[in-house]
Length: 231
Image (cartoon, rainbow, N blue to C red; front, side, top):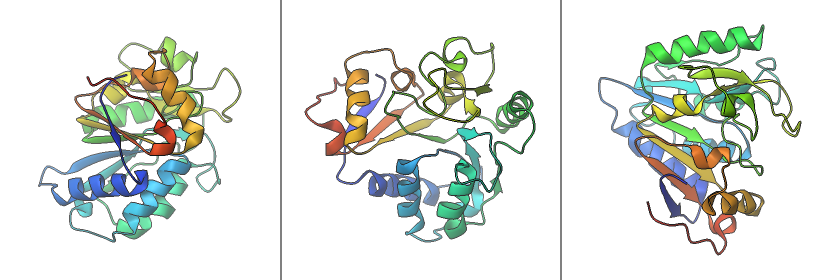
């Protein structure tokens, strides 16, 4: 596993502290923030939204790290969750880039790939960890993980195990690795087994995440008695 593991009392509050401080320090160059989906992400964004609209958000450009290929107003749409949970409270932001506008997933992935390549490296990428060890929509055994097209930052993908529904768009590992900082939030006992497998060195998607800096914000329920080695 890459990066440092930080045991925190509350993952959402620790994430909110980190992001609020980062946004407050945004300069004229702006800040490229890549957001996630899932229940832990929603809790993180609700905690961040509770801080209110702090200075700096007007210079933040928001992207998604993965998205389900569903209509924008679908309950499973990551962007709908991000917009309602976070952006409604802290916006307007400099730019908000939904990932899936409709149509063929492969074409949508190509368009978003061009967008993120032109935007430059992200300042912060937020990721979660699934019970199967997936992160973003990089599932164990999936094509996006094992055989991504050379040079691609965003691809279409599906879960070969059929556990996670919907076709997806996702950053590749190469797309994630461009980030200045990756923050992986892991909360609750349901994530302990996946985290334990990664700490033990099993080749799961979450364990392959790399970037200039990777920080794992983990609570006691997810960490259990694990003692991750320091990098």
